[in-house]
Length: 376
Image (cartoon, rainbow, N blue to C red; front, top):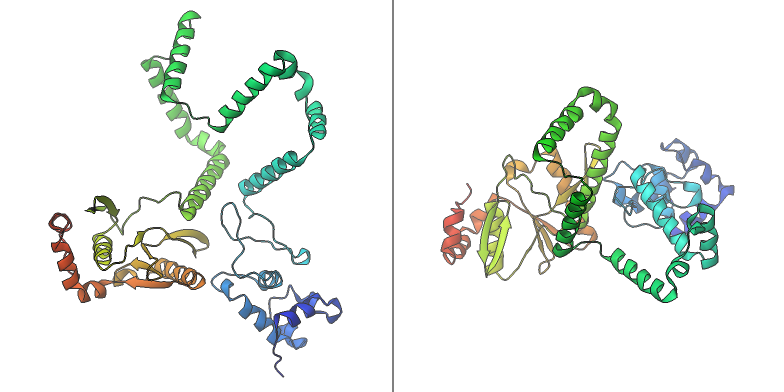
């Protein structure tokens, strides 16, 4: 007999320890659920968490997402990687991933929030314990009126620490003057060259590299995580690499200088523009998993008018495993955000060749620089 499950009925059984279902939440095979005649419930939970199908998510992970009524995959709010090690009994995920830098950043933010929420008397007690209050306060040293002015200057300086050009010149001149006054001198070019050669020898030696291997590895991981986060948030766009070459194509349309990674992209944008659809270039970034690690996929075009995300890719490059992983992630993103994923290949350019020629004829300078030919 197959039961028809609802979310409410499923949760009621999950919370009911007398029913014995709680003991089976860690089971990844079907044997326990077949014994309890609950295979259909397990299937219902898998269908309710279908957004996790593209990941290697355990049933424990699916169960927790189901109990928390999540509709998208839970990720770390700092690096956007998927959360791991769920605690089923506590009905919660860890706030960050297992990366040490994310944990430290999270603890630091929480400490600052706790300190900001403490009353003034409590802050003074803490200051006494750590020795901050041992020196005289600004009020005692300068008087209340001057102290307020100094505090305001410090507050303004802390908001914006970037020096102006005049301030930089003044700082350099002050250092130079003090060096002359006290008999100190800045390093000569010969001395700088010797230090540079010495540093290169030290840092390139095998002994030094082996000694600091863990530091180098941690630094590379931190840099990689930071750059992935910036790409995902749209703060940085990499200078990649158009399939075995690194070139760019610039066109000037309506006094706007635009840069594309290929001729196909430039022509597609131009034709769409004259058809009344102004596309946004490389605005959508989607996370995808390939060979056990997460990467960022920057989709070529976004059309808000047609509710489409568009990728320009020749047929010969569409069947690679990495490309398939990218396209699957893009389709999932489009489905969640009510968009359509459109893949453009040689066929589109062949079918729209007349429109392409008419568009390029309106811009002879672009036609000359691109020298675009219809793909066969």
